Image (cartoon, rainbow, N blue to C red; front, side, top):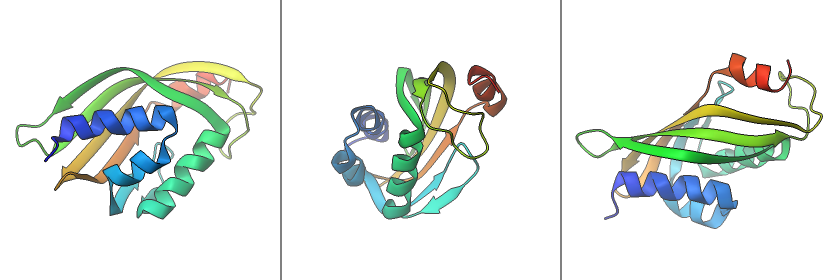
Length: 134
């Protein structure tokens, strides 16, 4: 079985590559996702829809990745830098005009039996909005 840290790293690579096939293989069918905007989705389908919508607004990738895991090997934190371009206005955010940004971003993964069962994505939204000019 692949360890949780490797799975988390593959997830971030797949997001950066827009490789939705690999993402689907890494996720449990009933995955719980807590988004940076405060929404919770349950299941691969709703998560995929959310990610595709988000990426339509924000052409974003994650770098400077540092992975940390708990002593039991089930939870992994990924400290990253989100870099991107804000290309289409998203509800609740400032007007989009092609702004570039780079902000700290954190993912928390919970892995069971080789798949991600829970995923949370965090960032300082006030800092993010400042980067977007809001």
